[in-house]
Length: 257
Image (cartoon, rainbow, N blue to C red; front, side):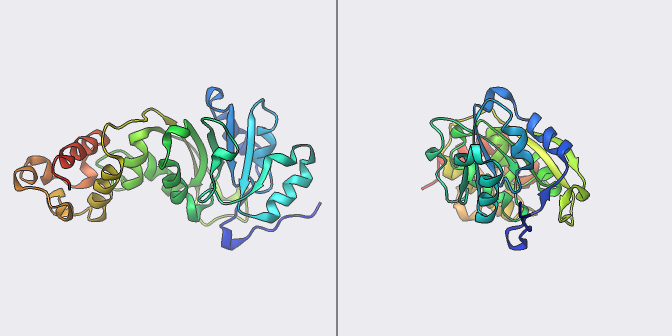
């Protein structure tokens, strides 16, 4: 069978180590994997372990050559492989109800994938993925950390984040310039009891000027002085916990127009 050549413009780094693929597959909780979407199956190294399980699996890849290869390699499961972009795709055409996500996310769009998931976290109870180690650590970071940022807060508002293990460069073709990390996101909240769009706006505004106090970072929200003079607004974004951001949004919502 013809070998697939990794495409640089797609950020492809194909996993070659079977033991790593099995560890990733084993990191998915059984209770969440009845419906499972694999993003970026590539050459099928991870897919091979997933197909051995009793679950409703579909795999989606933006690379048409990869999908054609997988349809040939797993001809008895050809209908499970789909050419498409997760950032634009409606996963409801594959599943009825909730679905978990697994995959080796392309480094260049991993953040976009998470923002896409955040559009409807009620549909995705768990995510197990491999991505750039720096991004994985950032997502799992706690407050008072320099790596704590927008994705940390937004994802942790809905999910419990676990950094599982680090993956060396040498197990990929071609080897990336950076280390990789595998994380697991398990949903723990579907309703923040705040306006979602406002919550996202508050978090993004706070971190876009993360070196400034909230009093200065949130000036664009035109909040009243009696609110911004409270001690909370003396803090910087990285000093606030996820719960504090939720509480802050509730206060802001009283004055937001």
